[in-house]
Image (cartoon, rainbow, N blue to C red):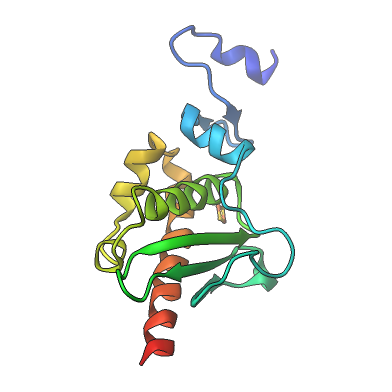
Length: 155
Ligand code: FES
């Protein structure tokens, strides 16, 4: 029997079946942001002025996330957010949604962005498969690192 025939139930049609047999189902939002990532930076640098950069992970071991932000010095709101990653589909979708969350509605105030939680990100994504939840941490940590970088530059 083919592995995919095992899950023919109409209620649950997994997007991925891992070699271990785990069933992974991605939300519409996750798939949308993976296939159409928002604010992804092509090339070495973003095409907007930035005043904060954060990088977490290691390019050498594969999982890396870099975020550039522009914070309006007067309003202290995040006006621009661009990113690059060598992470997986879940990391791409998570960071894409983070970049939308922090720039929508005239930009998120930095004190609010520093309090952004994994729960907030997962809520907007419509969840992630259990084994992929850690991937959403990369974008969140890179954002916080970019905000710290902004504070260092500003002081
Ligand atoms: Fe490493 Fe998702 S970012 S597995």
